[in-house]
Image (cartoon, rainbow, N blue to C red; front, side, top):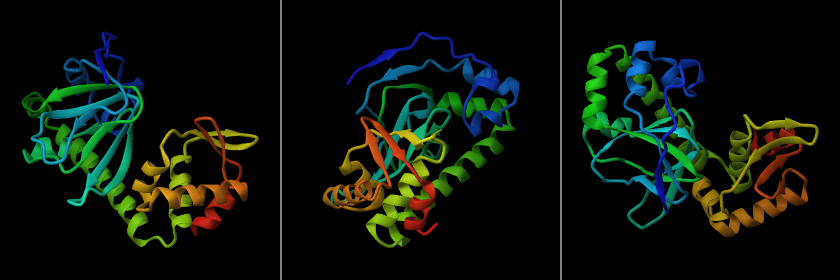
Length: 236
């Protein structure tokens, strides 16, 4: 697991920054924030922060994907979401000063910019309008967490939960004549941690989905021939 300093200039302009957080910043605030960014390349499996760890700062996902999860005292893990480019991680603990409530692990090679807690607090003081942007971002993260918990706790069978998950992941996938395609490199165990099911259950369910031609796999690419068919199974 390696990380290397990325020397690429991060001042790309507001129109090129992904994520609702950056869209809400004024040009002056965006320029100020970008002046503090020094992206580092993180390899899969690296931890950005862990549960119960003191907050170091915020983590900006410039590119790549990061897995966010929580763990029980018995060692069971529930994956809450996959953070993508433009998302800002660690906001809650940075603002409260309390230990992190989740673990962030790099899923794919990712460029991550870290801004230390004191720097970010000072940045907010210089740009008071950022408080509203941060509040909106925290509200969005709370909503995503609630939706994931609703899927795990309130959905019915494992096939229904898995269908909902696949639909969510493929929502912004590539549309082709053969269906919707999206990159998909999670293990069956990790999928199980998303929906609260065992690896064996996920393997059986995916096998059933493939035999019914609800999904198809082409290497690391997941293809959904008909979202309508999957929506029917998910009860959407």
